[in-house]
Image (tube, rainbow over all chains, first blue to last red; front, side, top):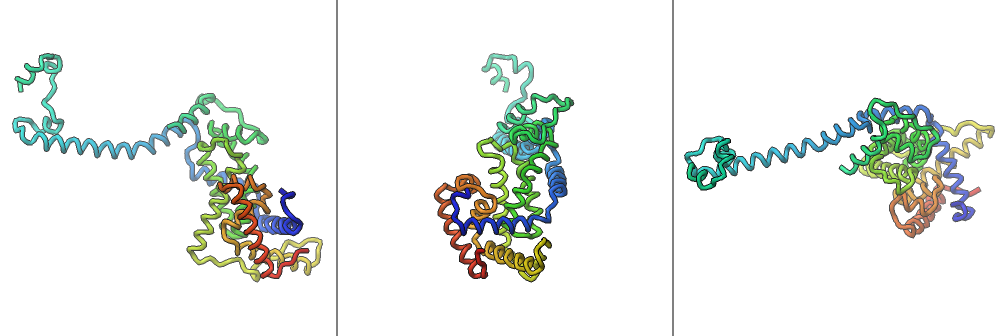
Length: 119
Length: 210
């Protein structure tokens, strides 16, 4: 670095270094280190321990995913209700889910025609 | 998720409840970072002790002797701690921490520009610590330092950053380019213009080279 500078620039460098040495002379390294470490503990209450990493990740992901998920479920319910409006024989729950109740008997009945006939 | 995976890989070696061997103070930076990411928070103290004087010099060079310096230095390390998982080891940790220091200083300078900032005035300057030299010499030295500081403060922030990195931190042009994230040629041209502006400002202040 010094080779890249001419004499006046080296003089300037020396003066600038002296200036910054003077301006930082009031800083006590130990005090500053403790202050920094305390600030880090305050701002990053959690550490890089595995439990903290997972809980931090879950917290950061949970809220947006939960919000978007809730919104989608509400949209789906609204769509199902509006779509099922014409089918007056369906109960509110059936309209909400957009389908007739799936009972064990219906689930195991592979005869689709028979199932449709029932409704 | 890939960040989490990286962290988990580094923590797998140390099962929960087992005390990890403390990293030595003179360990390589990478070893210290691995230790911090592995849950050894005390290891970060080594990084702070290693780089705080360097960061303090960079920030002071950029901002001058103000109250903002302590907060800025603290903030630099808080940000470094928070971004350790993103550190890929492509740049040296010194370059990485210097980049954070310069960026934070530039943020503060931008804030100053928006608000009313009272600059450091020569009349309010405390005296240079007494040395073996007489009071007249100390006064001369203080006056000279005031001239340099005022001239430095007149530089536009991006020029000031180059001057601080090259003349105060003693970085090479390529290291400066890495810190500032600009091409090598840009650093050279910016440094040349910054030096010209600084010399012009120093002349206005009545500064003379010994």
